[in-house]
Image 1: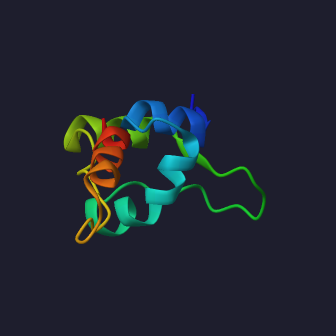
Image 2: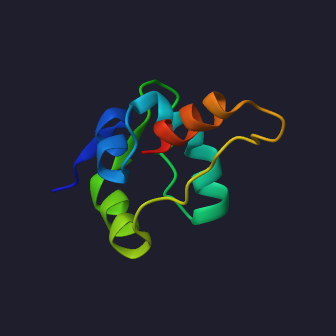
Length: 86
């Protein structure tokens, strides 16, 4: 039986702290790391096949961190960016 999951569960499986954080990185993951595309539907919310997401996690592990460019930022901003990653 095919089980479809939405962004909050995908985020937990992949290791993001929220569905919003996952959705902000979704296109990068698809383009750069081969993350599975959501099902083609015209309605929201987006849905993925659980088996495809699990296969990606098993094969790829956690996504590569993507930090904002911190050049010229104060130390507190850099620390905040690092804390968000963790």
